[in-house]
Length: 301
Image 1 (tube, rainbow, N blue to C red):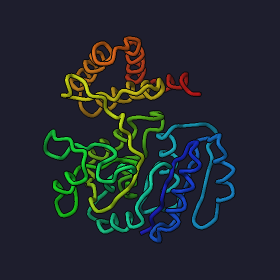
Image 2: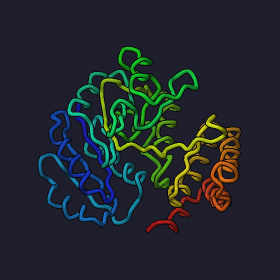
Image 3: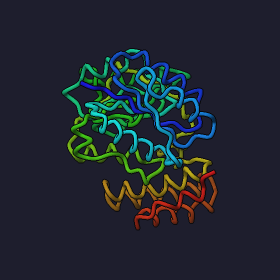
């Protein structure tokens, strides 16, 4: 099987160099494709010197297309180069040396699967909390994931674009990520699209991928009964409001859209008073529902 690593990067040259060095140590990787989202920190010049050296191929895009555009481009590129499996990751992650080998132990039984994504600062906990299958329980500790595993797997759960493997067959069936999403929600959309297509999905508990902790992901609200993905970034918020509305409407239905909107209004009126976010959210959602994915550009720096 031809395994191709796909890395998307933007203005994080130090982290990218660390990741590329690690990937070069992984013998199971056939090629390392790096998609640079028009970085301005010297990444393009560094990649030009790496292109064609020790399995690395690089391309710098003319414009910043966000993570969604980068993965759409990179995954299509991997398929063009006859990859049987694409190993997808952002530039700030770091797979353990045996991560891919442990993932490949399940080759043939899964279509879209990945490692446990651990907080780099504390590997006893997850970087991104996950909801266990068959219920509403959300877990944060690696020990809880290990307890829930069956034969080393947590079925139906994966953190997309953080060291995940996707088969050529699945890509041919469902396509590549939605580039127009730019950021935030493109990973969820691709996962839900894979689920809809009947893909076999799982997290491999013994495969580990480290990622800087995102402690601000999911701000508690309603006295801790639920969380809201608040961010101080206007760009991220706009994309989240737009893309989450589109995802829920497409895959979960209008009741879920309405619940998301109740949470949005509640959060910015009562939890963290910022009423100006409500009309911004409404404009973003309406743009997404009518198929306009250009509004985020006003927030680009």
